[in-house]
Image (cartoon, rainbow, N blue to C red):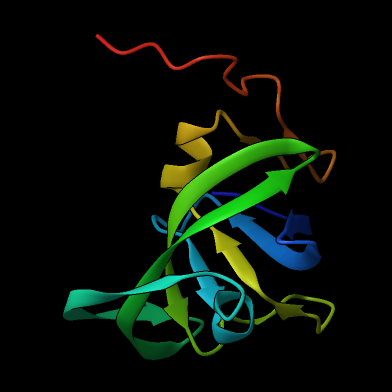
Length: 125
């Protein structure tokens, strides 16, 4: 597992993002979700995150830019993700499924993202 933190740009704003390979899904705070059309989930799900249980009731399509590359991914809306090690509020938690889709790898030694596998096209079989 690994974690990298950096800003992601979405809808003209920058959001402090935790890229976490230990988290399967992507989550955004209510603050971020206000800038996107949301959809109500057909079923409420419970998720343990940051030592708390959250009820997932809404989702959205997160369209953003990471290191000036466009991405889109499904994200769940939660009230609060938590703080990073420096006490900064995490606004987006970018999970493993989205990282896999967009070829994003974590480079913990350099504390940065490895975007060398970012797809130029999607090839389906």
